Length: 155
Image (cartoon, rainbow, N blue to C red; front, top):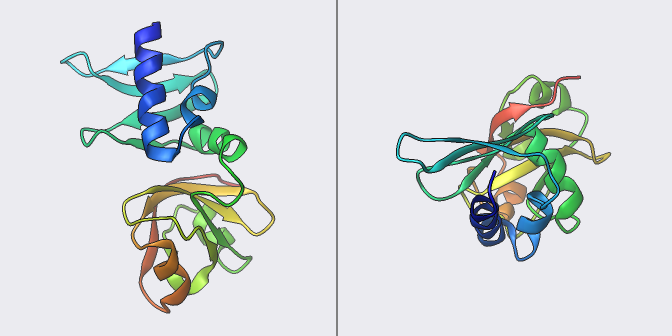
């Protein structure tokens, strides 16, 4: 990956997840590979460990598990996180969606369609996915899907 790709990806990450996240998600010394669309636009960003992100046509990233694990270490505590307990853990690990009644904690800054990390109350990453509700809605609604799980971490 060349420097112009890295700078571009860092800017998108800063926009989507907050200032400074891009340099930590895509550091200069990281072994990253980029696949491209037929028009030359970056599509998937991978490390030897797996997929970090996919750059969508909407100009935002969708997270892979590898990217979720990296974001866990670079985001502020609680940011872009949805926390569930023991009752939901096996279902989320199986790739099932997260429903509001099982959400224990959710970042109040989450907006619908944001990419989020789904964590167990112990802090283990269970899945990554797309928020269907705001963080406040996830905590207050008794019914409805909170997070559409895209990829999960099996046991």
